[in-house]
Image (tube, rainbow, N blue to C red; front, side, top):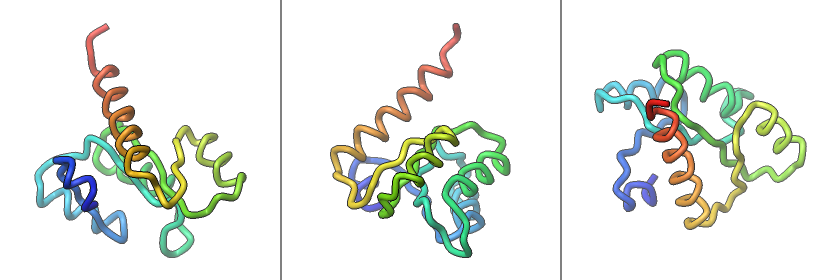
Length: 113
């Protein structure tokens, strides 16, 4: 979060989807991008969290996952669900490139065709 803030991003964080939704409500803004750890408390996954946030907010914000788990099955699950996965520790330049890529794709998708 600190690194993203140092790049000028507004960041809402939380240990649960509900906490993040509450933080977003305080900002009165929907996210432009969702970044989630893959493994979350109570056996939940970042895929579930992203999908819940998108559904509850009624948005299609781009999203990607981060995980310290390097098992290939995790990568396959993320890809099968349509998400990129970065492995921890995430290199700051790799993170910046991914954030830029996701935001650019979202911007391009919003242009009239």
